[in-house]
Length: 94
Image (cartoon, one colour):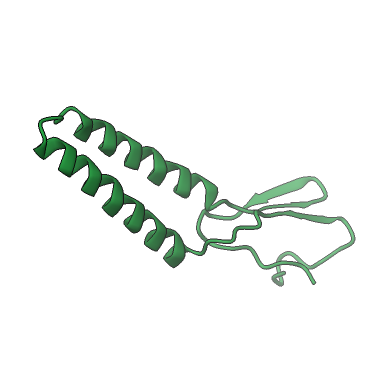
């Protein structure tokens, strides 16, 4: 907690319990992209070119899902709800 927002008995912190940090999520996304576009590229070379836009759409949806699941924290202190920026973890109350 900061000096502006001292800890109190009324503080409620809602934060996701993410197992992926930003670097791990980027590594996961890159490896899934490599496999997906590798398979789509091989199939495109075999004449099934319409699969490429679907592979791109799939990767866009995966990127959106990873971004959305990176989460933000919500801290409720009485009658005030504070929202932390996405991809910046909140400090957990001890």
